[in-house]
Length: 461
Image (cartoon, rainbow, N blue to C red):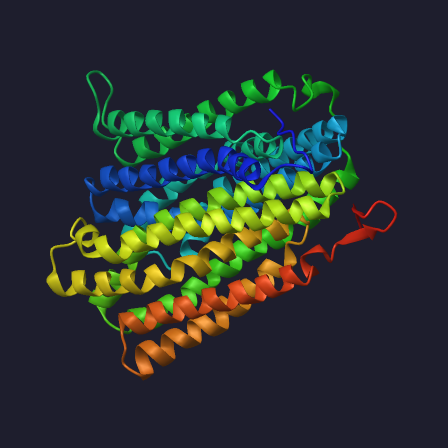
């Protein structure tokens, strides 16, 4: 399962290895995105209150996801590093401790969800008509948060061991089951009563439980975690390493969410049609992120393995070719956005003026794709070097200052509307691509690694 990496590999061999890891991750992300569309479609048949309840719950769960995903990032990096160093027992111990941390955090967030559902929703200024159904849905979906945390961490353990196919397969099966259960439990089927919004929540829980069972089977099959959990002992040092490495990764996600709130308010001021056009364009563009995240996942695993093997030159080769190949794929996708943007817009609305705004936004976004690819994949490279702070800082400056100020200056002050909004988004991504790129070229991305002059390798500081 672990990729065997050699320092004498040709560029074509490296590209094959990158694609071998990246494409399953891209497919997995694609299916998860499709599931979101189908889920929203089913719930929309119940009414706008139900759609709002799910949307608000997902906004809170995004914070949960950021925390759980950060532990997954840390687990992926550390496991890949020790696999690269040939220390399989240490990699297995990291996997054990990652699961322990996932269980602890899952239980904590579950208790918060059960006892504080309504207060959390009130913080979101939920209307009274939405509050009760949202609280019920939130409690059902989020109380068993342990299954969310385990899904993220178990998948990351497998990726750290060089296996992106298994998480992809589990995700596909889980999402297909989720869609079937959604339909049955929401609308009813034969003797099964229609449960409405609660049915959607139960469908989500059941599919996550099945996903955890499936991932557990493969983790034990591949011997990537200890077989008997009763023998696990908490290692405070490893838990602390996971937390300190993962915290900036979680911070970057939260910085992004807060930034979205800041500039979304400005876009709303441009008018309902413009905000709707922006949202729809974002829903179409999200598929490009699936490509970028797939190549970023591959870069994180492969670069971590090379760094673990004290091979900086090899790590840079994998990083460079990950960036190059991911940028090519996303640039091609950008070309499709430019050509097919108007056609895609008509799937969401028949309003001609809104469609034209969506078309303009996607045509501008087509030119942003190369910079976005560099940002996403370099973020994965920095994480591989245990440098999760740099991406967080660049995101904070880019989102809070460049993007937010740009949306106001270009979109509102100069009256460019939707064009101004997406030009500002482009400037943010170009800035982050340049900043991350410069620090990558001058090796600042390795600032948390200690150079071992005798072996021309690295050691964690």
